[in-house]
Image 1 (tube, one colour):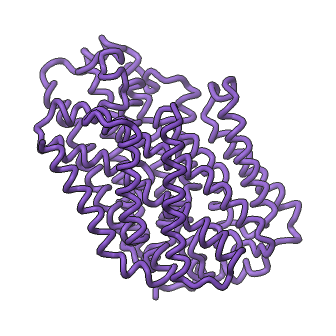
Image 2: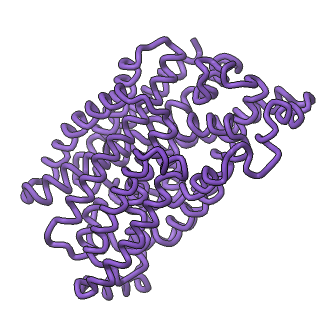
Length: 489
């Protein structure tokens, strides 16, 4: 009963936040899509973490820690460092550039930064965003089915619809500001949950020879830095970090910060959040071996249910209820921004920028709410039809976005020589390699598809840009000059 009460209160608070910001969100596109560029460093740090990690962390990463032990740690350090660099360095440049060029979305930025008047980059980016983000949303919604089905015996369709409707209500009504504030609260809940869970398992087993017991169950979990994982798997885990540079919903966080001068604080806070939460997830999975020695002993034989089982069956009901809210937070904290990003791609970057340039801000905001319902319906259908695990389904979408946009983010903020043709070929090649690699079993078993796709995309971008140097943007020198003269308003 305590779990149900906690969960209901949490959902009501999230909806209440959306309603609270509804009037403000209807005022302008900048407010609806970027919160008026007014987000402080603490909110940016925690909201970026919760949005980026989601159910992949609190469900999928715990399951990975259970299966691979020490090997799952490899992804933690590097992605914390890459996101630290992105926010403290490249992210600052993106924030300055997008303000100076009055860009509200990632496709806006590509078109302005590379002076593309043909809509080529905008249309390509919109297509990639819509396809991969719908997959991403579907994966997050699928995460809700495991939890709600296990706890309450809900049918998958009911669990998915419940999750989608709650997120849709507060995102549609409150826009970006509501998304950020709910993501901030959700991030704090995730942090608390992933500190409590491993501590609970550790304290419960103190004095029982924890290390020896784990070694007896599976020596490879602890007796090497690699744990039970292969070298190729480790390489893929480490290089997952570079995919964070291409996640548009994270890049949007950089664009919405209130002061460039405070982005270092946000970067440090985000790194701390990432390390603590990821380490907590990995060690929760590893220590869960002391409770369920083999996968067949787990409920439904599913390692991704470990967090749900511990909080609902082993812990105090009140504490367990808080952690269940943390799991729901992990799912919702990403779906809301994914929905908003997908919606903006269709309404602003396609409809307003190409089809109806005279559409008012109010009309675009209204249209966005309609499009959001349609996108949610498509994602619901995808979630119900797919059988992949949360972890790998998210990684597919993450890899496609990382390969398509990651190299562009870095090159566009540091290299004056990039051209629109380099960006276009980089996006397309990253997309193609991701899909081909993912659906070719012999290649997929070698290494995570993001790794070759990111390398090919980066190389293609540089080579083609050099070959088309005559198309170098004419505004680039003046734009880069503003990096040294910019001051916060």
